Every structure is written in C-alpha cells, then in structure tokens.
Length: 317
Ligand SMILES: NC(=O)c1cc2c(N)ncc(C(N)=O)c2s1
Image 1 (cartoon, rainbow, N blue to C red):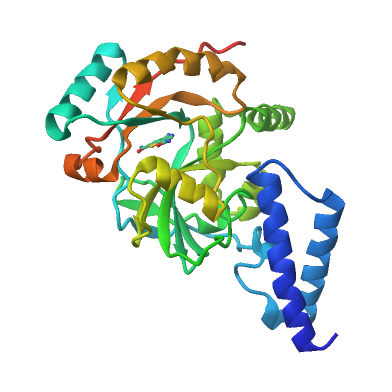
Image 2 (cartoon, protein in one colour):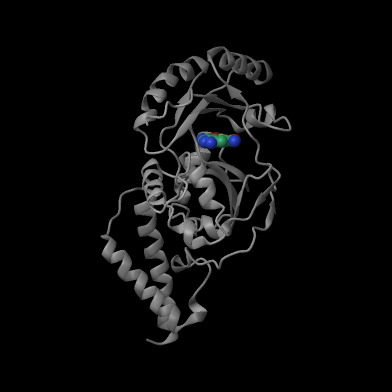
C-alpha cells in the first residue's frame, strides 16, 4: 500500500473507530462486535508502525499512550470551577427559590443527579481534546490529560470542530469499585473506602497505564466556555453536549417551579440504590442562561444553582 492510500485508510479508520467507540461507551449500544473493533484497531496500529508520521496524538490508538510522569503540571482554569451551595431540606430549597425569584422573577429549573466522583475540566480546540484537568482549588488544577484520555467515553475528537471547555464528573462505577477492591485485598493492599476515593486515586496515578485499567467513566454536565452557539438554556446546552458526542446523564428533568423539583426528590432518592454509580444528591439549576447570568456567582459558588444532599447512604457490610 503506498503512502497516499495509507493516509486515506488511516483517516477512515479514525472515523470508524471513533464512531464504534462512541456507540459502545457513550450510547451503550455497539453496532459491531468487539472482534471487528479489535481488527480495525490492529490495522490502524500496523499502518502507524509502517508510516510513523501518520500516528497523531488524537489517534484512537493513543488512548493509553502517555509516558509515566514524575509530577502533574499546574493548569490555570480560564473559568473558575466553583463549588455548589448545599441544601439539606425542603425549607433550604424554598429559601433558595425565593432568593432566585426575588432577583430575576419566575424561573424554570433543571434537576440533575449529583455524581459522587471527581470534578474535571476538558478543553477542546477545533474539535480535538487538548487538555484535561482536576478542579484543584477551583482556580488552579492539575493536568491529568493522559489519564483522562484513557476514559473511553471522553471523545478524542468532537462531532463538530468547536473550541470549547466542558466540565464533568469522573467516577468509578460501583461494579468496577467492588472488583478493584477484591483484587487489592487479594494482593494484600489497602482497599479504597468508596468509589469516589478510588476514582480520585486512579486519576492521580502518574502512570496512565494504571489509570487505563481502572475502568473509569464520566458524565459531562456543563459548558464552561464556548463561542456563540445560540443555546439559551442549560437544557439546550446538555442537548448540544449529546450532539457533540459527550456522555451526559439521562436522569435529568426540567421543572416549571420549585414545587415540581421537591416532588421529584423522593423518586430520585428511590432510584439511588439501583444506579450503577454513586450519587450524593441532586443539583438544581436555573434553566435560562440569561437568568443565570443575571444571578451571577459569589466567590465560592453560583447563585443560580444549589446541591440538595441526600442522607449518607448506609453501607451494607
Ligand atoms: N461543583 C459543581 O458545580 C457540580 C458538581 C456536580 C456533580 N458532582 N454532579 C453533577 C453535577 C451537574 N449535573 O451539574 C454537578 S455540578
């Protein structure tokens, strides 16, 4: 095969492997058997070995690529990663709602599950995943790009060539957590206390090959920085994230007012134990981006969102 043909075939393999990876890890609905995916990956790796100049950082073959680091570089967040104020009962929620409506009038809310993982930021330039970082102190985080590239539900290339920054929660599914702890106990190692610590410990590994084995996943939940795409609400932003190939959490609901939010809480609490991942509550956000803008943020957290915390889950020993 001459170089020109190889170049075209590599482009085609990128498209196929990215699409099949998206179907498997984001839609949980593969259209080809694993053997077909593996065959195409082997063909890509062979072509990249034969023509090293065709091996690019965004290649599907480079998900578990990075060398072992001796430390993580610091990353200054262009948009600070704020934390959320907490509500513990219905009165706290009604106080939040009253403050919001006093400032901007009637609002609609979006309710989402609060994933118990590690907040991360993902930056894309012209559609390519270029940097991923931890929250850190909200202003400065750690560059964990190589470890985040091992999370298969993070697209290496978006379905549109946009430059943007998105936020999400990296987490370890409950089943992966149980399996990892069995292995650690079998090896005489200290087991992780909970999936959140296991996810944090995995993403702080200096060797990406270890992170790659930890079966981490992510739900993306916010667009932090984006040119004008015409989305005017948070729910539209979540739909855009779906269109771009991100994994968002399907358990989201739009509510006309705080009464509808409160009605929802018991149902979501009911679901908690059946979910394949840990949650520690729900996040309630004003849906209109214009109203979010008008409400603004304190130094610590946005005035247009609040976390409603569920009681700590009793651990079944
Ligand atoms: N600290 C934060 O702003 C957030 C933290 C989280 C979290 N742990 N899980 C879900 C969401 C969400 N769906 O918005 C947010 S937002």
